[in-house]
Image (cartoon, rainbow, N blue to C red; front, side):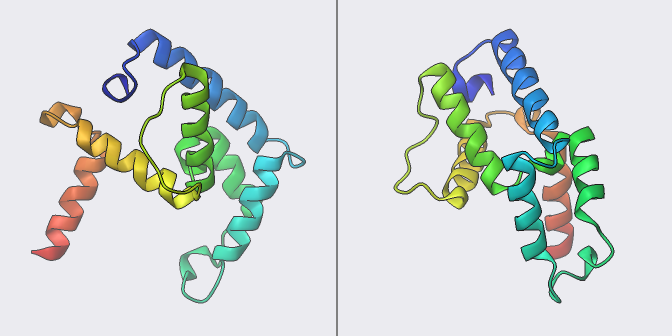
Amino acid sequence: MNKITGKDEETINTFLDEYFYELKQSLSNVQSNIYLNMKEKFKSQKKPTRPELDNVEFDIYAGEAAQNIHYAMNKDNIRAFVLKIEEEWGITLFQREDDASETFASGLLNKYIDSIEVADDIYNDYVILFRKIRDFIV
């Protein structure tokens, strides 16, 4: 993130620790807006085209997301994350033509991809994903 924000590692880590602590707290509170919004979005995903969600209950998912915060980073939460970074540090991470959550999620991913200069810049999860895509195509 330091390439994207221009901030030092300590500043970034402090921000991330605070941001994700607050997100975890919200996921643990069934009355919070984040919890209620994610529950509604989760319900909309439970349909015949998503059989992997048939036996998944939102409360269990939310508990897992509170422990593994990356599970909580849906498009709406990515949007909120980007806006918080921009507000906190007075920067604009990327230009956008609308305020849609999809725009924020794809914009942040594109910004991250644009920041990659060497192989060590790629998060291991993306390396694994890229390999799976390659193996699927080949």
